[in-house]
Length: 417
Image 1 (tube, rainbow, N blue to C red):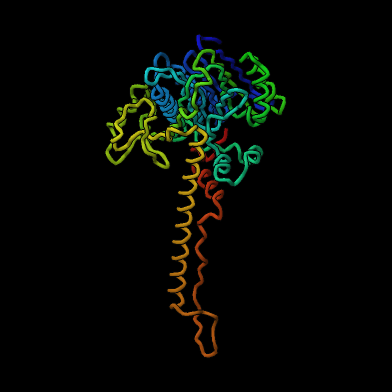
Image 2: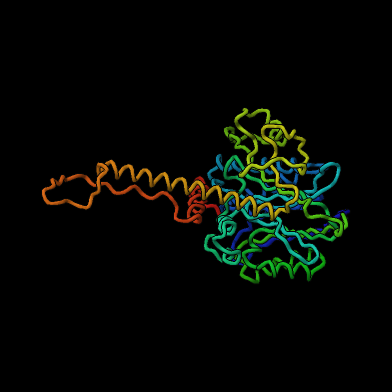
């Protein structure tokens, strides 16, 4: 597929093990995205198709806000169907891809990601992962408990921490990037990256100049390596854009959005984009219920997406610092999040120890109890086991417990892609 600015190649394959392809993708003049469904027969493929259809409706001079609204609409639609139809109970999907948006009268690329499907950028022979995996193993990598190489073979690498269709509130990562001549982007489901390394992907993208040929080669490589999952790829080549020698990567922005949960009481409601307009949602919420959250919150900078919010607004749209690339911002966010987690765990441990000491002191009357002495009267009492240690031994245990709770679907299954 071609348009004035881009050459696009795409391919999808069931693989060598699965009987059904639960992936879906959308390629238009405006949007290039991949969705990886989960939930099994008659569920995963429905969720991924709904996500793709929601983005397919974007056209014209859209903004990053419009793309976010489309993802929100897809999330609510999938969740409504999952709750109302037992055959689709527990379904969900990851989503990653690129939309051409307008900001300050200039066309830019908005990279959107929810889950562990990935979007890469190849520039001047260097492959960089733009998106950040929302997965259990990525949390372990961010916290320094395992390496990226160990994450590739981790037994729980299929556990995702975010997906569409699981809960009404959804966290969405959004990046806006300049359109740079010569850049090549790859959006793919995890069926590719679970089978082949980034080095193999880089070689294929460099060896095949035609994007369609490159897409088909990546599918072949995934199947040759085992093909244990469905694999879907989109290769996007920028033909017209800014001169790469004049582009400053500090312009890349990461905007981490967590949309306040919406009640899904009317299971049959048709969630149109107008219904889900973010500005309208802001006016409908009370002062103590911000529509957007981030952890940790950050000051508004001049590098705000074209939202037009007053910086003095009580709940400004959170963005990364203007001088950070997406990966730098992600590392800083992870560092602060881990620090907050350690503080909470440490505080909980101190509080638990204090409670135990108070109980022991009360039981012994504040005296040392080295055992009965000659002449002492010994009472027969009911002995109660010590309260269980609810504090994780390690941050990895804390993350595992949290993900395990958050990723249980309505029928008790674990989210996996």
